[in-house]
Length: 539
Ligand SMILES: Cc1cc2nc3c(=O)[nH]c(=O)nc-3n(C[C@H](O)[C@H](O)[C@H](O)COP(=O)(O)OP(=O)(O)OC[C@H]3O[C@@H](n4cnc5c(N)ncnc54)[C@H](O)[C@@H]3O)c2cc1C
Image (cartoon, protein in one colour):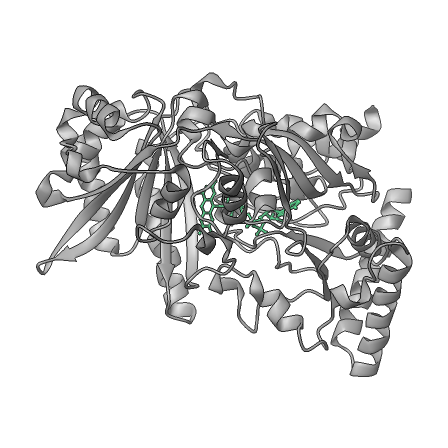
């Protein structure tokens, strides 16, 4: 009965907020004043004032603050729903105040760190909402002797890598290869990169975290407990709280590593090499990571597919050449292909910066160019036959635009249990596929054409990828898999996309969610739902 009453009141409040947000300016001003007063009243008086950190639509900086961390042009149009206000905390008390005020006013709260969510879920909602944007909270405090660092969620991966290399030439952190990705989303969604086969995922190297929960409590690992600490390491932090900072364990890397980038088209035997790669890439020495990027291209007026092999080896070139000649002679790696460098230089190499570029570029928070994009993912557990690969190339050439990236698993990834963290895709996977379309043309026609392209290649791949269930990587957000009807979340609907991301771990995530956020304050299109009401009442 009480629950019903609460829901009705919440809906009434939402409706009144929605109408007030569409009303004349004086009314709008009064609403904004109410929100701002709530933020002021709810923050700690000893913390820096919150008023200059809150941006309302009338504020001249509102649009630029909102747009600064939109990393997909699909969600940067005049019709994209906009937040009622944005808070840019410099202190944990500002996060607490944002949570409490969103709760009091029945608003949804979106949490943004680097803004790279492929489907924009950190800054777009159809319900009245506010954004907590953590870009001001971005300190990285490295303890090279202790082999750890405290990293705030608003830092980028580039800033983390830069800070580690500034303190040590033999330490690194296993995370993604794009320097502008934000720590908050990346770590709470698992985080993988080219150190994965040797050192696992980012979340396999997280030892503590500070979170503000739905009641506004500031918790560390000890006070949040092991269940919540488990959930935020790969289960998507935004279902459980706002993660302020992470304590990460650094890993050892040699002073000299080796990289290569070799391209082969179909005419140069790409099919044979890609086919063979599937039998080698997940079993070879775990210091070696060889990614393949496959792109449909036109060469001498002929359509073809280019396979770009990009590698990091944690050792010297001589060792790499020995390993490749024994395990993968078909590749034909030559000494001239191999470049020795420090780990931090390899980060720049993988981000396509020319040799000699200063690591300072890793501090640039804005990518060189922005695009419209859509991505999807799959896991492959049985090698794909040559005939099937040829069919895939045909499809890519017909569609013209999708790129496929194959990332090898094995090594340390196979040694960690699938339930150790919410990320379940461990032993048994040869590689993960990322499907990608990017475009620059505006308008619905382009949008639909490109969405059709990526969905078409994804459908084409059905026979060749993991089936029960067909699996996806949470950090490659894909709302095509299904979304919550917010305000009326259903366990059975959510389990459709939930088991794709988390397999059997989905149920434990639901249990943790029910325990730490029973009122489902932290909700969004792919948030973890609470246990269905009847079973909770029966408890
Ligand atoms: C160019 C590019 C390259 C990429 N490369 C890689 C890669 O190499 N490896 C890889 O694993 N992934 C990669 N990704 C995917 C990336 O890891 C995810 O998109 C990740 O979630 C982005 O984190 P963010 O903080 O930038 O994004 P946001 O959009 O800010 O957040 C993503 C999600 O996390 C939530 N969230 C963010 N911060 C917090 C917080 N502090 N507390 C609680 N919840 C939070 C958001 O609400 C949202 O649901 C790449 C993405 C892009 C666009």
